[in-house]
Image (cartoon, rainbow, N blue to C red):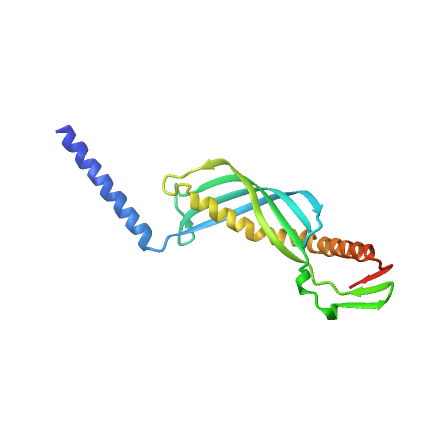
Length: 193
Protein backbone atom coordinates (compact mmCIF):
# COMPACT_ATOMS: atom_id res chain seq x y z
CA UNK A 1 0.00 0.00 0.00
CA UNK A 2 2.83 2.43 0.90
CA UNK A 3 4.79 1.61 -2.28
CA UNK A 4 1.67 2.17 -4.34
CA UNK A 5 1.09 5.53 -2.65
CA UNK A 6 4.78 6.47 -3.20
CA UNK A 7 4.48 5.48 -6.85
CA UNK A 8 1.37 7.64 -7.30
CA UNK A 9 3.10 10.62 -5.65
CA UNK A 10 6.18 10.14 -7.86
CA UNK A 11 3.99 9.94 -10.98
CA UNK A 12 2.14 13.12 -9.96
CA UNK A 13 5.44 14.94 -9.39
CA UNK A 14 6.65 13.89 -12.85
CA UNK A 15 3.39 15.10 -14.41
CA UNK A 16 3.65 18.44 -12.55
CA UNK A 17 7.27 18.90 -13.67
CA UNK A 18 6.31 18.12 -17.28
CA UNK A 19 3.48 20.64 -17.12
CA UNK A 20 5.80 23.28 -15.64
CA UNK A 21 8.28 22.57 -18.43
CA UNK A 22 5.54 22.89 -21.07
CA UNK A 23 4.28 26.18 -19.56
CA UNK A 24 7.84 27.42 -19.34
CA UNK A 25 8.58 26.81 -23.04
CA UNK A 26 5.25 27.89 -24.49
CA UNK A 27 4.44 31.12 -22.62
CA UNK A 28 7.37 33.27 -23.61
CA UNK A 29 9.87 32.81 -20.81
CA UNK A 30 13.25 34.29 -21.62
CA UNK A 31 16.79 34.42 -20.30
CA UNK A 32 18.41 37.64 -19.24
CA UNK A 33 22.18 37.52 -18.83
CA UNK A 34 24.65 40.13 -17.64
CA UNK A 35 28.42 40.19 -17.64
CA UNK A 36 30.89 42.47 -15.83
CA UNK A 37 34.54 42.56 -16.88
CA UNK A 38 37.45 43.82 -14.81
CA UNK A 39 40.53 44.24 -16.94
CA UNK A 40 44.21 44.76 -16.32
CA UNK A 41 46.53 45.52 -19.21
CA UNK A 42 49.41 43.11 -18.78
CA UNK A 43 51.85 44.10 -21.49
CA UNK A 44 52.33 46.21 -24.61
CA UNK A 45 54.99 44.75 -26.84
CA UNK A 46 56.25 46.22 -30.13
CA UNK A 47 56.96 43.71 -32.92
CA UNK A 48 58.47 44.02 -36.41
CA UNK A 49 55.90 42.42 -38.73
CA UNK A 50 52.76 43.53 -40.43
CA UNK A 51 51.62 43.74 -36.81
CA UNK A 52 53.48 46.54 -35.10
CA UNK A 53 52.04 46.20 -31.60
CA UNK A 54 50.30 43.60 -29.49
CA UNK A 55 48.49 44.03 -26.19
CA UNK A 56 48.03 41.31 -23.61
CA UNK A 57 45.01 41.36 -21.32
CA UNK A 58 44.20 39.44 -18.16
CA UNK A 59 40.50 39.88 -17.48
CA UNK A 60 38.01 38.65 -14.90
CA UNK A 61 34.59 37.88 -16.36
CA UNK A 62 31.55 37.71 -14.09
CA UNK A 63 28.67 35.99 -15.93
CA UNK A 64 25.09 35.76 -14.65
CA UNK A 65 21.99 34.32 -16.26
CA UNK A 66 18.42 33.83 -15.09
CA UNK A 67 15.06 32.88 -16.56
CA UNK A 68 12.41 35.58 -16.73
CA UNK A 69 8.69 35.58 -17.32
CA UNK A 70 7.49 39.01 -18.44
CA UNK A 71 10.29 40.92 -16.70
CA UNK A 72 9.95 38.94 -13.45
CA UNK A 73 12.83 36.67 -12.50
CA UNK A 74 11.73 33.13 -11.79
CA UNK A 75 12.93 31.62 -8.51
CA UNK A 76 15.69 29.01 -8.64
CA UNK A 77 16.76 29.94 -12.19
CA UNK A 78 19.76 32.22 -11.50
CA UNK A 79 23.16 30.80 -12.39
CA UNK A 80 26.51 32.52 -12.36
CA UNK A 81 30.17 31.84 -12.79
CA UNK A 82 33.40 33.79 -12.72
CA UNK A 83 36.39 33.03 -14.89
CA UNK A 84 39.69 34.59 -15.82
CA UNK A 85 40.71 35.13 -19.42
CA UNK A 86 44.12 35.84 -20.90
CA UNK A 87 43.87 37.39 -24.34
CA UNK A 88 45.98 39.09 -27.00
CA UNK A 89 45.08 41.78 -29.53
CA UNK A 90 47.41 42.65 -32.43
CA UNK A 91 47.35 45.79 -34.54
CA UNK A 92 49.40 47.09 -37.40
CA UNK A 93 49.27 48.23 -40.98
CA UNK A 94 48.66 46.31 -44.16
CA UNK A 95 51.69 46.97 -46.38
CA UNK A 96 49.89 45.31 -49.29
CA UNK A 97 47.72 48.43 -49.49
CA UNK A 98 50.74 50.54 -50.48
CA UNK A 99 50.73 51.63 -54.13
CA UNK A 100 53.29 53.45 -56.23
CA UNK A 101 51.31 56.67 -55.65
CA UNK A 102 51.96 56.32 -51.90
CA UNK A 103 55.76 56.47 -52.35
CA UNK A 104 57.49 59.57 -53.70
CA UNK A 105 61.24 59.84 -54.06
CA UNK A 106 61.85 63.55 -53.58
CA UNK A 107 65.61 63.41 -54.30
CA UNK A 108 68.56 61.06 -53.76
CA UNK A 109 68.46 61.48 -49.98
CA UNK A 110 64.75 62.06 -49.28
CA UNK A 111 61.73 59.80 -49.62
CA UNK A 112 58.10 60.53 -48.80
CA UNK A 113 55.70 57.69 -47.97
CA UNK A 114 52.02 57.57 -47.09
CA UNK A 115 51.24 54.62 -44.80
CA UNK A 116 47.85 52.91 -44.59
CA UNK A 117 45.71 53.42 -41.49
CA UNK A 118 46.45 51.11 -38.56
CA UNK A 119 43.87 48.38 -37.94
CA UNK A 120 43.24 45.51 -35.52
CA UNK A 121 44.75 42.46 -37.23
CA UNK A 122 43.86 39.75 -34.72
CA UNK A 123 42.27 39.12 -31.35
CA UNK A 124 42.50 35.81 -29.59
CA UNK A 125 41.81 34.15 -26.28
CA UNK A 126 44.99 32.49 -25.07
CA UNK A 127 43.69 30.85 -21.90
CA UNK A 128 40.65 30.82 -19.65
CA UNK A 129 39.91 29.28 -16.28
CA UNK A 130 36.56 29.02 -14.50
CA UNK A 131 36.04 29.82 -10.81
CA UNK A 132 33.03 29.95 -8.50
CA UNK A 133 30.30 28.24 -10.53
CA UNK A 134 26.80 28.40 -9.02
CA UNK A 135 24.11 26.30 -10.70
CA UNK A 136 20.41 26.71 -10.14
CA UNK A 137 17.77 24.00 -9.93
CA UNK A 138 16.10 24.85 -13.25
CA UNK A 139 18.98 26.51 -15.11
CA UNK A 140 22.24 24.57 -14.94
CA UNK A 141 25.60 25.76 -16.26
CA UNK A 142 26.47 24.23 -19.64
CA UNK A 143 29.47 24.43 -21.97
CA UNK A 144 27.37 26.64 -24.24
CA UNK A 145 27.21 29.23 -21.45
CA UNK A 146 31.00 29.37 -21.24
CA UNK A 147 31.34 29.63 -25.02
CA UNK A 148 28.69 32.38 -25.19
CA UNK A 149 30.44 34.35 -22.45
CA UNK A 150 33.83 33.96 -24.16
CA UNK A 151 32.35 35.02 -27.49
CA UNK A 152 30.79 38.12 -25.92
CA UNK A 153 34.10 38.88 -24.21
CA UNK A 154 36.02 38.53 -27.50
CA UNK A 155 33.64 40.90 -29.28
CA UNK A 156 34.29 43.56 -26.66
CA UNK A 157 38.03 42.94 -26.65
CA UNK A 158 38.65 44.88 -29.87
CA UNK A 159 36.80 47.94 -28.58
CA UNK A 160 38.64 47.73 -25.26
CA UNK A 161 42.01 47.67 -27.06
CA UNK A 162 41.01 50.61 -29.27
CA UNK A 163 39.99 52.62 -26.20
CA UNK A 164 43.40 51.88 -24.67
CA UNK A 165 45.13 53.37 -27.73
CA UNK A 166 46.30 50.29 -29.62
CA UNK A 167 45.72 51.87 -33.06
CA UNK A 168 47.69 55.01 -32.22
CA UNK A 169 50.54 52.91 -30.82
CA UNK A 170 50.47 50.67 -33.93
CA UNK A 171 50.65 53.70 -36.25
CA UNK A 172 53.52 55.18 -34.21
CA UNK A 173 55.47 51.90 -34.28
CA UNK A 174 54.81 51.47 -38.01
CA UNK A 175 56.27 54.94 -38.68
CA UNK A 176 59.35 54.11 -36.61
CA UNK A 177 59.88 50.72 -38.27
CA UNK A 178 59.39 51.96 -41.84
CA UNK A 179 61.53 55.03 -41.14
CA UNK A 180 64.40 52.89 -39.80
CA UNK A 181 64.11 50.49 -42.73
CA UNK A 182 64.29 53.27 -45.34
CA UNK A 183 67.17 55.00 -43.54
CA UNK A 184 68.92 51.63 -43.48
CA UNK A 185 68.85 51.49 -47.30
CA UNK A 186 70.44 54.92 -47.65
CA UNK A 187 67.83 57.67 -47.34
CA UNK A 188 68.82 60.46 -44.97
CA UNK A 189 65.35 61.93 -44.60
CA UNK A 190 62.15 59.91 -44.47
CA UNK A 191 58.85 61.82 -44.47
CA UNK A 192 55.98 59.62 -43.31
CA UNK A 193 52.33 60.61 -43.51
